[in-house]
Image (cartoon, rainbow, N blue to C red; front, side, top):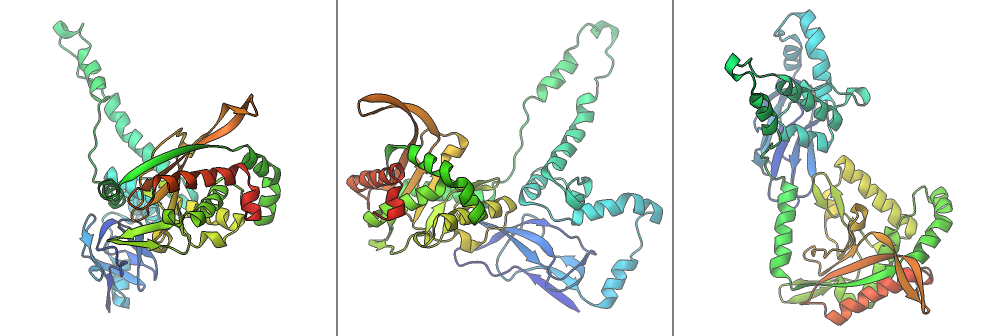
Length: 415
């Protein structure tokens, strides 16, 4: 009996997907729910599992193909005859040689690959069978791929030019020129679906919004002192670390409650005022920038926010974020400070009308009560759509965030 492997149903906002990488080849045995192929969409990478156990008898769509929901990707033979045929297929070489050369490579190739490794293999046109994995249980890591590339390049770099004729002996130019040519490498790779979507949305924000940015600075001393005082007890009780982002989420929610226009969006000629607070947290991944969303963030305490952010970070690293994690959002926070950014103007995340940018904390000389003192200062930036948010509201919103952070009692006492 043959069973078709179909492209799963895609969300309404996603029209198609690109086939990234097959993990099996025709003739391979597959287990039920074993991942067969990765499909890349505008936001996430989808895994397509085998509906039944059997033998992959045919692949109908190759890597790089754009597919839509319901299309047939492959066929699995679930009959015993098909399985027996796969098991008794004559090897291409002697059994002894196959045992020495092919089995370890097949095992490495069948190991699950992380999204970053799959992407690197695709960009370098390498096959998992060519690489020996050094990770857990023989899993291929990104370092394994890079080491393999270095080994491939080493023989080429080590080759010497043919011995020159006697009259050319004093000129070492050929070997020097070869080394110089290797200093200008180029590589052309297709833009990922996620990168293309990010580019499209950023251009959309630039074209369709009257974007403006206002700035302020915040003294982080109170937050730092509070965090240092309770971070150990917090981690022991809640099994998660106390970071700065939970303070900014809480402060932003307080400001959004005072200025609901900043939490709104424009739909045609209508303004939609959201009565809930779904806060997007921008996360940088090897595939590009993504924004998972904290649903009903106003209902979460500090521990709930920190646990959710940690969970998003882990999912982003392993490529397991779902569409539900990325959909919606009424307001976004992005932290360029983790990369050392001092000041920037974040771009809106449509259809949201505002985004808060955090930056690096630096000790600066400030004046307090007529005295010059050193304080840990962070610059804040609020980009907003001037069609919906007036300058007064934007400035006061940022002042509210500043006040909540400089006096955390506002957050704890809800005043």
